[in-house]
Image (cartoon, rainbow, N blue to C red; front, side, top):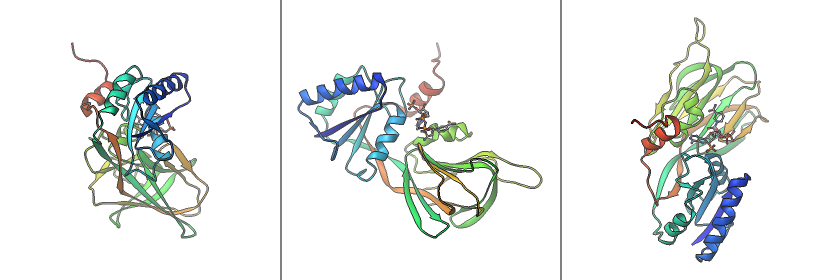
Amino acid sequence: MRVWVFSNSGTASTNAAHSLNKKLKAAGFTINPARPDVVITVGGDGTLLSAFHRYNAALDKIRFVGVHTGHLGFYTDWRDYELDELVTALKNDHGERIGYPLLDILVTYADDTTGHYVALNEATLKRASSTMKTDVYIKDNFFESFRGDGLCICTPTGSTAYSKSNGGAVLHPRLQALQVTEIASINNRVFRSLSAPIILAPDEWVVLKPASDVQYVMTIDQFHMSDRPIKSVRYQIADEHIYFAKYRHMHFWDRVEDAFIGAKKE
Ligand code: NAP
């Protein structure tokens, strides 16, 4: 098996990554950053997001494993004091994997060229200053005219990140669905949008057609772009999935409880 350890630059993570690399070599694994079968991230959910974008051209060939050097995360199943158990699990690997949906983003720029991107957590369209005005279409049917700071479209695994801060629901990652949340919408006698998160079915898509001649900020996970005028953006569930090596299974709602509530009943 070819493995690659992808770490953030924090001291705890680089130390854990160094130790893990030594254990993997001693156990006979091939360290190969160019064509890994398994990418082990060491850091947090943000580190796994970075690794996902580093390897997003080969998602069908790679499985991810997340080691967290802080608290347990949503993309991280292992803690940095469990490296020996992780190496043993990798040695007993039979290729088990679990796949989760991704977000496909097709941008049409004002000059009619297009850009195609994939997000693991979410994509947003915003304005850095002033109100964003955009028409919203669902499956090519006009739905509403939105006024506010922006809109966020997330995957089920991304529903515990930015979308949740916007009042979105937490979605179980086995659902094949996308969620749209509003970021500070303006609702008054003149402007009206739904003012509630919406959850799209697997065969549905949403298209934003923002007012022309103004500058937008488009975010895709941790990246942002604002350099080109945008005509429209289409969001739908991607054909690709992200795959995780399935060595241990933590109940999703236990993970949510651990991350956001944390106080077990006596
Ligand atoms: P970042 O500092 O790397 O991440 C922000 C926080 O989001 C970190 O605590 C990170 O956890 C956590 N996180 C990432 N993915 C998550 C998930 N799927 N579920 C629950 N928590 C998650 O920020 P960044 O580099 O700018 O952007 C990365 C992500 O941050 C974005 O995809 C977005 O979802 C989120 N974000 C949230 C807000 C907000 O809530 N207001 C605003 C901007 C961006 P770790 O500490 O484990 O890395």
